[in-house]
Length: 252
Image (cartoon, rainbow, N blue to C red):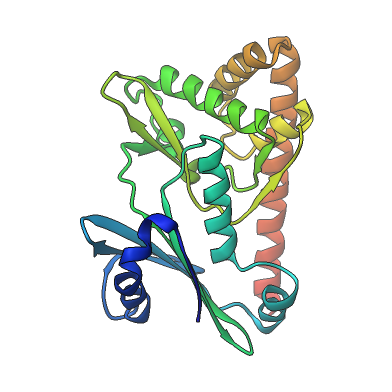
């Protein structure tokens, strides 16, 4: 087992290692998805969030062993970069890679962050308290990401946690970090495309476009047109993939 720990958690190495060794038997189930599983473990006064990545197929096992870093390693390293740049994400603690000739499974350990909401609530409840304020501050957060050259490829409604501060402002934290690209700079086209997975709701898109246009220094009309184009393109790709998967499933 290959293991890497954040320097602030070296004293808890044995306890963390025990959580990994007993992942299936212990812990509180937090997410049990088709691809990955997340469990919570109490760890010396904090709650550790441990994500177990699904055992990859043989092709990916070879790829993750020789050509690409595992999802657990990428999650840990990307979280470290985000924190260095002042971008919100739960504190990384460790990652583990289990090799049996090739990569068998992997785990990413971070500190559990209990959020007040995710971006998804803004898309499903337009009357959510402070809705307009949160949405605009979220776009400010996204603009800061882009200014730092960070392209979060899974910038989707469930992957931003939101916490309200005591002063009434909001903080934003990225999760599900294993797919990111880093650039020296990002074009407006790249930035708008990165926001296209968040919502097709026209009212929200208009507010998002207005705020981003102010921050970037472009006209609202130009940004809105780009946002609508990219949002519709993503929606079309999404439903096309869904139809293809359904057809393939039918012919199996």
